[in-house]
Each structure stands twice: as structure tokens, then as C-alpha cells.
Image (cartoon, rainbow, N blue to C red):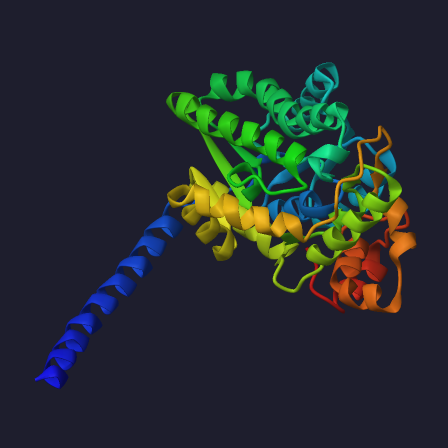
Length: 367
């Protein structure tokens, strides 16, 4: 009797599974049909000189866009321009996104050059790492200035022309840190929470103007950005924080930049409200929404395994300034993928370009 019951249950489960699979396939087909064609459209990618921003520019060029990239570092911009030049129509403009006047001039220059701006990808950002007791008030201000105002300023600069045309797309690259605040990244998380709130509110308000806003919430990615992360606290704390951060940014499970860029551009073409990836990040945000207390308890346990606070100092160091202090055969081995990403994605002051970069990129996955 028991065996027959289990057989009947299995028979009922098979059609249900088939129906679910067919439904998912059908939904994917519908979404593909609704994907916008970006051929000929003009896109601005902030922070487009390196890392994920550089790969987003590459992907948008592959989609047929004309692309403008902006960043503060002119040397990085020049290398990125050379990297992208053979792939399509590219304009590079130096710009500090915290300075509204510079942002307005950048958007005006892109508009003069290409005639309009159809797509804005707010990608630029910084990461401030360290326990709350070891980071200063100024570290919070800096994170908010770049990761929040650096999203708002270019958005406000492109909105008038998008509203006038009744069309446009804005993509805001935030983070899973904008849904779950993790230890030792609190300044970064605060800024990303603000960016998520801005992005979701803009989507609701701008839909009536024909403007689509998409919020992107990625988990760990591999772009070589650990060299540009900022670390606070005494030197011992900085070194310990860099070590775990660099290892985490080099793990094979971290999403490769090319895959991340394709995922983000696809979400933009479909006009999705938000998109969280990889699946582990999506599951984590869903669980946190249902059981926030459990998430907080788990993260408090994780915090016990992280470097101990030693007291705030005003001195901030980038990862590139710390790396030489922790280099060893073991460290080099576990960060192989991260260092390959540094070379491919223009993250090093001596970043390789052209054929050399492509050769290096073929040796390992990179973000």
C-alpha cells in the first residue's frame, strides 16, 4: 500500500516538474522577444576605464552601441581607449563624478560628440574595508560621495534629454551589499543601500516618462578590484583585511567579468526592474528578507573570524600599496585568478594592453 502511494506521488510529480520546466522555458522565450535592440544607441559607462566597467563597455560595443567611458584617472582612460578602439566608436572623458560641474560637462561633451545619450550605466564606485571601529567618519563620507552621489549626479545630468525624447535606459550597478549589510564593509554597504533606494524610487517615478531603470545587485565578482579597495585602521589591520579580501576576490566561484557584463546588459535590454546574481546571492537575499534575524546571527559569527579592531586612523591605503607586504608563494597561489584579472582589466598602473593582455587573459578566468 505504501509503495503504491509513493508511486502515485511520483507520477503526479513528473507532470508538475514538466509543466514548471515548460513554463520557465516559455518565460525565457517571451523575455528574449522583448529584448531591446541596442544597435546605434549611445551609452555612457561610468568607471569604464577598468574592471567591470571596462568589460561592460566591451559588451555594449559588441551589441552595436556607441560608447563613452569616464573615470578620474586619465592614464587609465587612455589605456582603456586603446583597448576598446578596435571594437567600435568610443569616446573617453576624464570626470570626477562627485563634482556636479564636471559631470554636467562630461554629459554635454558626450551629447555633442554622439548627438544624444540613450543609456547610462552607473558603474563607478569604491570599496572601503575595515571594522567600524577602525574606519573614520570621513571614510563613510567618501563611500557615500562616490557610491551614492556618483550615481545621482550623472543620472540627473542625463534625465532632461531622456525626458524630452520620452525614452532612455538607466542601469545602476549596486551590490548584494545594498540588501545585506556585511561586517567590515559597513561604509560601502550604507552607500549601496542608498543607491538601491534611489534606483528603485527612480524606476517608479520615471516609467511615466518612458525611461526604464534597472537595479543590478551582484555578489562576488572577479575583476582585480581588490587592488583599488581602500583599507582603514592601523597597518596591521590593513594587512589582515587586504589578505582576506584579496583571497575572496580571487575565488573560482566569483563571477567572471565577461559573464557579469553579459548578464547586466541582458537585464538592461529586457528592462528588468532588478537583477541579482549569481544564484547564491539571490538565495541569500531571499533568505535575509524572510529571516533577517538568522542572517544577522550568522554574520555575527563570521565577524568573529575576521581581523580584530585596533582603533581608527585617518590613514587610508589602497590594496596596491599593501599587496607587496603579504606576497608569498602560498598567497600568490591562492590569488592567481585575481592577479590575472588585474592584468586583463586594466587594474594595475602597469596594466598590460593589446596582444599581451589577451595572452594573459587566456591563461585564467577573470572578472
